[in-house]
Figure 1: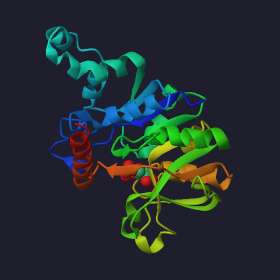
Figure 2: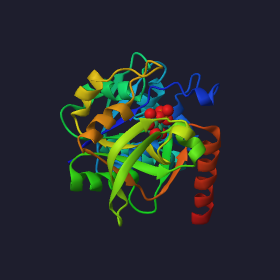
Figure 3: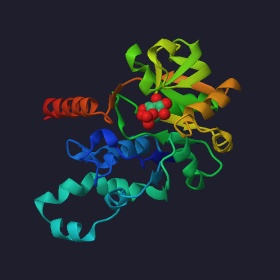
Length: 277
Ligand code: G1P
């Protein structure tokens, strides 16, 4: 059973400077809701109530967001504006939030390893909040939990990206094992290859289920040429043992770490809003 979701949220959000100088990039809103709240809602809808957040310096707004705000609540109590806080209050009631600070930015693998004390010895989900996904039915975390329940090993959600974008993603190589559910047995992985070196266009998006042996692997991974510890390289070791499944998720993803993707997401959710209202 997957009980915990890890949210790496220590990054600087450089592509969004100066907006992210004092505001964590995970707190940038799509309409009136911060990116990280969409992520927490996705985890909750998959039955996960334990949210483990890897933060860093300058990220205190995240903790405040997922906590009661007595002064504000008492001010709005009994007024017509009370409803604006309803959603977030429900999330706070249903979930437990734990935090650890990443002291140095040494890559996604390092961020995940920093979360080990919050996770312990159990399989867990990882959600990168700047990959915002909109799914018609189950969210991506629910979808990959279903795959995990079937195969009992690490799972990565993937999507096909244009070849010129392979250098922005971890790319998998794999054998299709189930046509109907779009699942692949991963045989190899490479982090951010240039187009000419990429084996294909199957890119890992920011949704993972990881088995806890990943922590020992991460402790022994050598940093890459930029001094970063990559989760892709740790997963590659599991893949060589036949222990990684890739799953082409059903839904639409927006790369909200880029201004273009962020605008697309905003337009998409705004259009949904006007259709539904
Ligand atoms: C990270 C991972 C990469 C993955 C991507 C998904 O990269 O290193 O393998 O494809 O997330 O968003 P980042 O976007 O943090 O540079």
